[in-house]
Image (cartoon, rainbow, N blue to C red; front, top):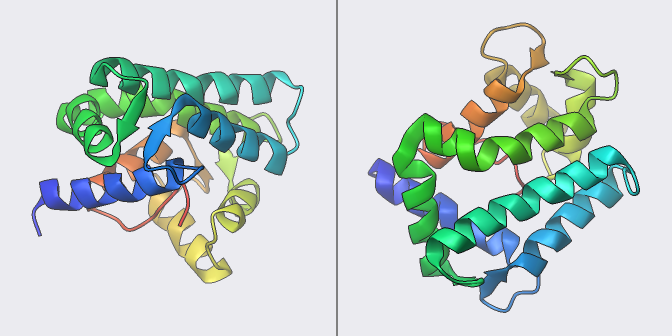
Length: 175
């Protein structure tokens, strides 16, 4: 399977996850619902971290919607614009579009405030996206490329990038 085919399939999975209301298009309200779900799951309502997460999610939607020149993206439109704005631009695309959202998630998960995610801090995220204990342990180890025992935003962005390029099978945004 080619990288482009794998990327397209993975983006279609993301589309399905982000189409919260199941109407066949993703809209700003779908990203709002996703952000609000995370904010509620992690108890950061009415906090600066919750507000930053919501802003990051909506910023990602706005960036993609503006590039697609629409406020409602079909699966095909989303896949095309995500390939154009993220995947085809490699590290720069992931840094520009995906990293702000991942940073906001890291900030929510980082309970001890050290700027990185420990194995214990990440367990709650893994559980929330449906990974079993063994899958979570394996995923953490695979993502921790520097072997520090903590996950940096850069390591998480690289893991999401590699997932979309078919280099790993760690679905960090849900299963």
